[in-house]
Length: 435
Ligand code: NAP
Ligand code: HSE
Image (cartoon, rainbow, N blue to C red):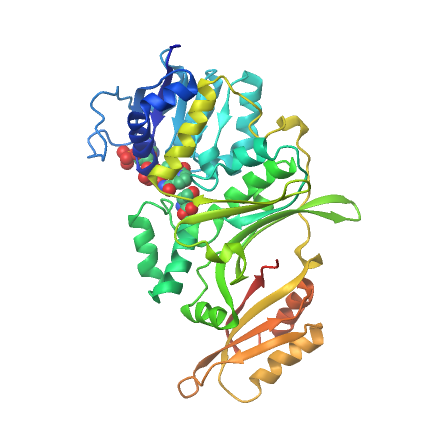
């Protein structure tokens, strides 16, 4: 058998430990498929004395992860530290500059610095691979870049954050509260080091920007993702959605748009109401699912575990197997210099149905004020629900579902209501996912 692919691992947390376990457990079958063994020759993390879930005694420790790529005995560095900048980025840059391949699960780093790293990797003719950065164990990058490479994509959307999906589906099934379910997602190793990245939609936006660049051949533009998370949702929204025939899911969506001045790209992460009969309504727990609509393939659905040690390690090691086979490829499917610059599409030009939730003062005239704003902005209301009465003089929740219409009309209605003393909290708008 050929010489082993010699690997240095930076980061020995949830994913790093999973990668070691996977390489050790499936060593023989991986070697057969890759045509040569994968051999870990160096490891690095922050704290050498930390108790780990895997035995590290046979691997050489290196304190400074940034120099891993410079070691002559290393062919590829696997960065599993996290963070857009800091040691992860220093390690990635140094690895590629040393002429070595880099594998990473770090969507924050790729979303912010992917174009720079890819440009450097292409110039150095080394692999830069990040399958695990999007949707954990689902081979969706490979799916778009290889299996569906012949298609023009009309739309790519899906559930891209396991933590949010775990929170939403567990709250839905058990009625447990937000903070309690988030703590469980952290304990299971799904959440980012700073869980605000999960619940505010940033992590899903990182992944969407990466997917959109690959699907649409566009320069990655994370700043253009219109992002909202799930932290403003209440258990009552979940119950309300249920009574209307929907579940709530955090959906990332990207599709080409057009304006008078040329093509654009729409990218948005936002909680959506998903009809019970839509495939994404049945995606529960930390599962992710990505729908890609190709002009020849039709609708493709990629589904699987979006977080956790085993699934994420599976994606990392798949990249290592590709590298062992000698596959380099352009990180974003086409060379960086050939990616198009697509300005953000304006969300107001879109049409759809929306759920709007108000928390208002419980007093006469408030409903009339809300509906007048809708009328004046040209928003047609399909249903309006005010459940029960609040405690004397307190707040009450009013939920509306609109008919199909321009998103700009809903924005205008909310603008008309802005500053009204009847609104106790800012309104929450969620789009209703179409077929
Ligand atoms: P983690 O459990 O927090 O592990 C992070 C590792 O990086 C630890 O071994 C830690 O060292 C090391 N580290 C952190 N800061 C460091 C520093 N300043 N210098 C040196 N080492 C440092 O994180 P994880 O969940 O494995 O995630 C790793 C990466 O995979 C992240 O980019 C994450 O977004 C991505 N990812 C995670 C999942 C998932 O399900 N967890 C899924 C997909 C992608 P010590 O152990 O010594 O503290
Ligand atoms: N924190 C991420 C999630 C990990 O919950 O989906 C996987 O990328």
